[in-house]
Length: 361
Image: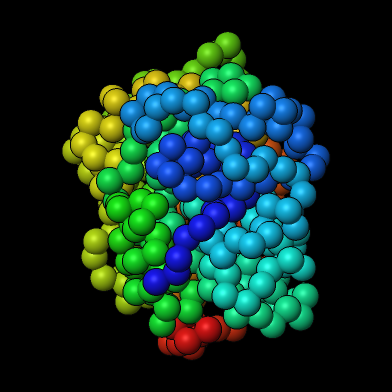
């Protein structure tokens, strides 16, 4: 098991700030990094070195060990790196990290969406041949929101964090290390197992797309309060059933963490029953069709599901419909810009060969 001295957290959005503050208050030394172009968004934290965290996680004022926009400084002497950025930022962050990575480091994407394989491809493309272990988690450890330049609030904590390791031969060691940070971490078969168990693309896109007029017209909007009506719910469940069918065709066994077709519980397997009322209904948005519920969950979620389905002969008509509608709405071809097996260099892969690669590295 890796000895944890200092943890680097890359990305200072909702999740990154919550992780940095909570883990600091748990007694870990944390280096928090943000891209230089976003320095303005963390100006207060750069000056004070402090994040106030409230809600249901550890509460208080956390004095962060280091807050920086210098990646070499952030990773100096660090063995465990937690990368907490949207899927569309994972490749860029991998390219920035790559030159200063060292043998023996572990990089964990929280969440992943098969982004750890993207990270692997970046290292390959740059000719970096170092002993790096990659991993990814199915979801964030918290439902959190930034509420001021210095404060983040945690509405809910995850009770289950499925985690895949690449190569999966290193799973036991990495899981044991990460459980020191988050006891809810559990071992998945591999990183594709985790990527296909991300339920956000089943939860967010359908109610967002089917409420486009409301979102664009209203001054305010709360997805979990307003959008998940019985009819919309049926579309969400149809998407989720397609995801589960893809998982089964790839040979992944339960649990599939599916949506409950009879209730409005949408993430109880990860955050516990009652999570919609406890946290979801408090979370504002989306307020535009450029929100991450569309621009992340569709090209990096539904497109991945559909592409994985193509490889194993599983049709995904509900996913396809939402992808096509979102492409029209946002005037972007998400089939071309999204995360497909072709974009990952896997267009001709045989499932057994991919699983062998994910196992052995």
